[in-house]
Length: 293
Image (tube, rainbow, N blue to C red; front, top):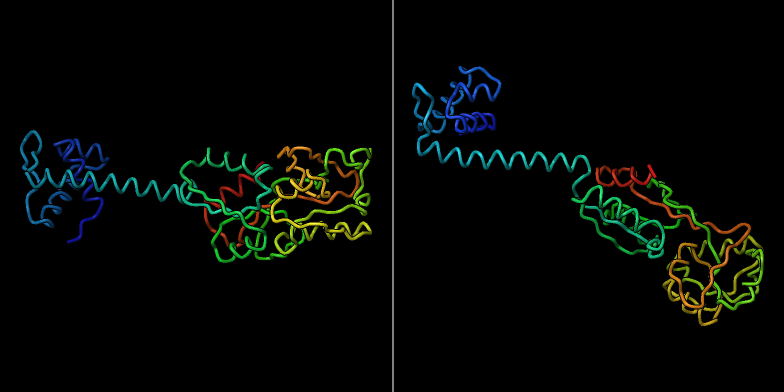
């Protein structure tokens, strides 16, 4: 037995109209082919689905049962096609996002909110990972896109999009003498005690170290930490200074002041990364949203 969707669709129309002529008009076909299709359906099933009379048709018990089931099948087919079309348009699916923690203080929350409003059926998840871990997760397809502050990352098999431009600023205790300088330069920090993320954990920390070397000094790292909030707590306690992306000033840590570097400030630009061979419509929708900003 091989029932096709067209046969069911034709039968559902006749069952709804109880008249072959009206059903033919509804289907935009002539009456003879419709009558022939219903007849073939009955022959295929081996029993009568309707009784014909001058004013129309009457469904048999078997016809009534098939009409009910066929309507459910057609409804599920419509839903399935709609779901597939939504997936194809990137309006439905899953999006796994890798992100560095500091990005949450910048433009990222607004971007994900905007995407959620535009595509509410997309289920997304966040994984806080350092850049090296994000690269590995992208390669293994455990995440679909990644966000980190890349300057020196060599990833020829990834495409990248600039999300936001930022500069590095100096976080100091509010009564630190550097607060009195009208124009602060990176070289002015040469004699300071630096508080830094571990370079083994943060590629960005290694980048900042190289920026200082280019200005003629090697920073004296007094203490290390794993999180920016820990650095700010140590700055507030007067243990030293730290270099952080300007967006982290939004944390408003007590007794901490962010100072702008007036010349040759290190970049803290945030980038989005995704695989060059990525074919997910959801990822494409997200990337295009970023590009249109």
